[in-house]
Amino acid sequence: MLSIPRWLFSFGCSLVPRIIMLMSEQPLVGVVMGSKSDYETLSAAVEILRALGIPHEARVVSAHRTPDLLYSYAETARARGLRVIIAGAGGAAHLPGMLAAKTLVPVLGVPVAATQLNGLDALLSIVQMPKGVPVGTLAIGKAGAANAALLAAEMLATTDEVLYQRLAAWRAATTQEVMEQELPG
Ligand code: RP5
Image (cartoon, rainbow, N blue to C red; front, side):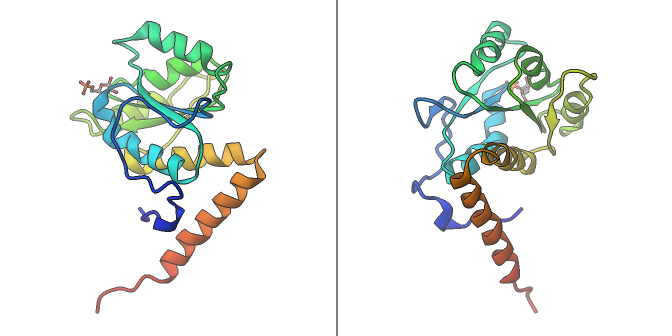
C-alpha cells in the first residue's frame, strides 16, 4: 500500500493506539471493532481519517461480549451525528451486520485476520449479508481498513466541497508518489 504523504498530516498526529478516541464533540465517522486486538488493523482507518481532518471516534464494541452496547451504539448513531460507521471484526464477525440491522447509517465492514483462517472467515461472514440489510465490505486487513476510511471520506465529500478538495489533493499526492518511484538496478 502507498505510504501516506507527510504533508497531509495537518494535525501533526502520530498514531496513538488508544481504544477510545474522540477527535471532536461531534464525530462524523464511528470506527468500531470487536476487540482491542483489532486495533492494529483498524488503526489504518483512524490514521487516514485524522490525516483528512474528519471528526471521528474509535472504540471497542463487541457483538458477542457487549451486545447491549452494540444495540445502543447503533440506535443512537444517527442522532449523535454519525454519517458513516466503519466496523471491523474477526472470526464470525457479526459486528458489522448487527450494526447495520439496527441503524440506517451506512456501515462499512472490515474483515480482520484474527483466526487460523486469516480473515477469510470474517470476509465471508461480512460480505454475505442477506438481501435487505447492506454492509459495504472491504478487503481483509489494513488495506481494507484504509479503504474504508477513504470510502467514508468520499461519501462525506459528496456534500462537503472542502473535504472533496482535500481528497483530490490526497489522490494527486499518491499519483505523484508512484510517478517518482524508482526501481533498484
Ligand atoms: C472478534 O474476535 C474480534 O473482532 C477479534 O477479531 C476476535 C478475537 O478477539 P480477542 O479474543 O482478541 O478479544 O470478536
